[in-house]
Amino acid sequence: MRVIVLGGGVIGVTTAYYLAKAGHQVTVLERQDGVALETSFANAGEISPGYSSPWAAPGIPRKALKWLFMEHAPLIVQPTLDAATIKWCLALLRNCTLARYQINKSRMMRLAEYSRDQLVALRADTGIAYDHRSLGTLQLFRSDKQVEDAHKDTEVLAADGVAFEVLDAAGCIAAEPGLAHARHRIAGGLRLPHDETGDCFVFTTRLADMARGMGVDFRFGVTIEGIVTEGNKVRAVRSSVGELEADIFVGALGSFTPALVKPLGLDVPVYPIKGYSITVPIVD
Image 1: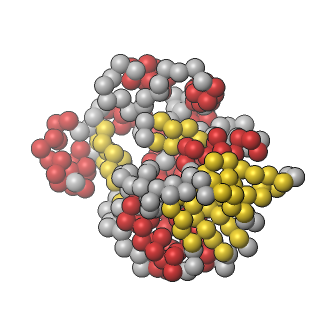
Image 2: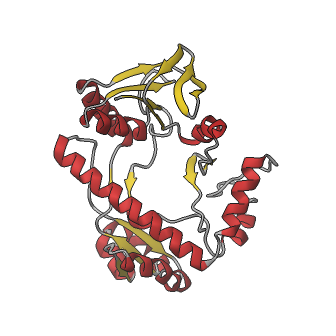
Image 3: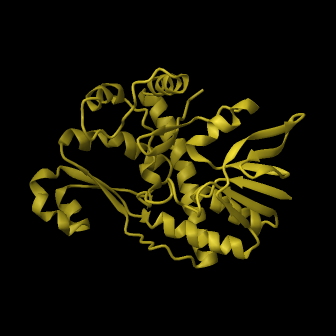
């Protein structure tokens, strides 16, 4: 089967690798002159399923008002009135209850845990090296209130079988001795021992080399301009190099995907926020 993957970031390249492994004829279209040159270029490279949490959470509306006046706010929403921004804000507010937060977090963690397991399997299968380290992560709490509030997350972690450790100040320093000089500012912490880190750019470029060796055709400098349909089927994509046909098309364009597939009647809940492309989980 002929498959065209739109986008050469970590998602597009990984998708192409698995499709080629399954025996398909795969082409990757990327507007840059190489893979992983946008969102996948310099991100944190952190694999932390247990920290997969929806931004829609109890208390976020109040915090968001404070962030509007912070120079380095963790969340920035430009004050525009376009339909996408309004829709995103309403979905966020609708999901800021404790019940919806716990459901959404559980869903996100299950998907993240599955993805992490697949990464482990991929690493074992290919021997790919990308500055990978499995030393866990540690979230610090600076107040007793934060320690108490952590139970909302640990209940979900426990329910989904994610390993975690709730630590006091001494435990945090034992896990990370470099914190000893700041002991007086630490009330406690939450450690996830199975978390990993790595270089996303290196991972993506090396996996692309492996995919290329399996026959994947990477075409760079190609801009996607639209979708061509025939009946109820996508026949081709319009691009800067003309129409390109395939049997199947995979959209892996991050925050550009929703606008591309909207003419098909597809509503992809991805919205760009201060360097992020996030999916807005919604409880029906």
